[in-house]
Image 1 (cartoon, rainbow, N blue to C red):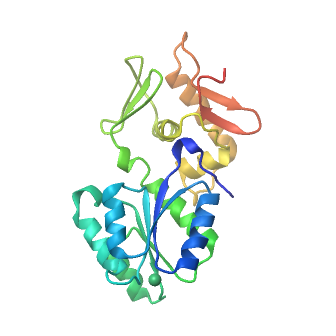
Image 2: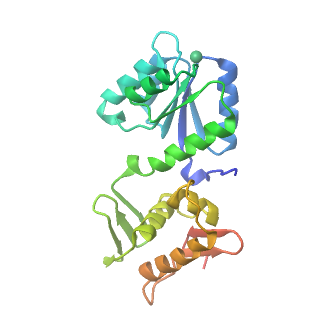
Image 3: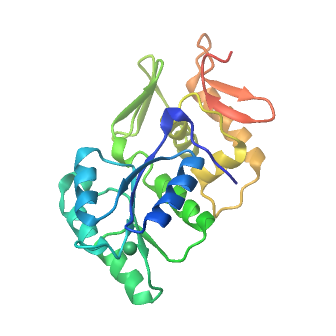
Amino acid sequence: MAEAYSSLAKPTILVVEDEAPLLTLLRYNLEKQGFRVEEAADGQEALLRVSEARPDLVLLDWMLPALSGIEVCRQLRRRPGTRDLPIIMVTARTEDQDAVRALDTGADDYIAKPFAMDALLARIRALLRRSGGAATKGAISYRDLSMDQDAHRVTRNGRALHLGPTEYRLLEFFLQHPGRVFTREQLLDAVWGRDIHVEPRTVDVHIRRLRKAINGPDEVDLIRTVRSAGYALDAEGH
Ligand code: CA
């Protein structure tokens, strides 16, 4: 269940919360899960922090002094640079009305206080997955392999590769975290989604297809199999 991120790809979470003990608790748990944590104690500070350095996700408390979470969310959505910034709103109330209002304002998800830490972490991971690559759309590459995410084109050493949709998504995920080893379960979560039941050995089938598609006869195998652990995009391990 615990899914720590490697230092290569540590997502940054801006936690906007005015209750110091809760902020401390959130920082502790998020850092334990491998996230980088930035803090803001009120709405103005949150807007300032975001404009200084764009985080990967904002955990935004609704009830904040001076500028409410709703207003912060509204302002972030108005700015071109943060229109698609992943935001989870933390509401102190459980009425459906509030949830609807949070989503209407542009939040991607919401969670009501008091929440279980595991539930919050699951929502954070799910949202990061859904927004995966949104901030980095463009070209990503590893060694002589490159992926143009806008054109949906993959090339190796200049040669166009033809990948099925699952192989494409697998490769995209690997390219976002080069060198990191993922278990079959993690790959299933990332590529197929947590809600879908798929046999772990299905991953092996798609890894085989991916290898066939990206590795030419005289080329280095870019996928490393780590016995009893999983797979990584890693040419150095051979
Ligand atoms: Ca508050």
